[in-house]
Length: 379
Image (cartoon, rainbow, N blue to C red; front, side):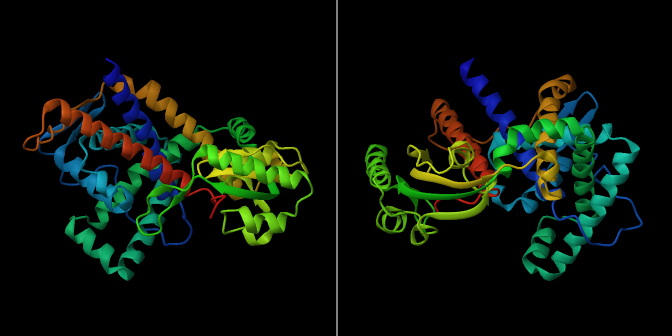
């Protein structure tokens, strides 16, 4: 029972993650492009026949249909291609596809009109990009993805996203903003980083530089010297492992909190101005910090880009509510083929290895999403 619960929880959390990533990809950069006369469809053509891999209250999904969606998903999200073959990841994508179809079917005429406009613009951009990128064009040909297929993919995802966004009220946005104030606060901060981990530039793997205990002791040593009147410029050059600021006295000027990793962001937002705080632990190590200035924005001071970020956070809650409350009512039944067992792999060992891969995939996805929205405090 415990293993089953863990597996279901992983699938749902990762589903929401990928839905969010896909939503940002599909809806980002929607300027420019001419609108087409023909309207993109909510149904892929030529895929209605074949083995059924999912049934739900409002319909079904055939294997050819799902294969088409998977092919386009893999091309639009190349970072996930290596894990697309994992059985439970495929289950996750199938559940995502069904959820998008259900959401799109609930969209109002106004939402569908807006979604068509967005899909048109995205399709034109895709076509232009494909003309200039031989690799993309070759991949689309290899996977048998026509422009009509891409138009359908964009229409389904756009309709789902526009429908979710249409539920967000100004009150929702203001509530999300209250939870995100630290992201928009602009601070000038000095810090000295004592690393515990660093990334190998060749392999991309993290390796230990010093233990957490060693790093904390060194950070406390730095703080004591600063408290005693030590010079930030000299101490940053001597102690800091952050190449982006060590030669500037550890200084980051007028940076939005959303540019930093979570613990550093919160410290920049909460720490008393002008006071050298206790060492702050992040995934990089320990930071000795002093906030020199901080401007906290009000909701009406947000830029249009900031407001889109706030609205996206509010919309995500509606997506999560839909997945938790509405999707179970669809009584989704997935019948994807069982993965083939390799020679010499026992049933117990195989399940354990698969769970490890799934956990790694989930961790990797979460890291990739975060990395796209933050400026590392230790660059």
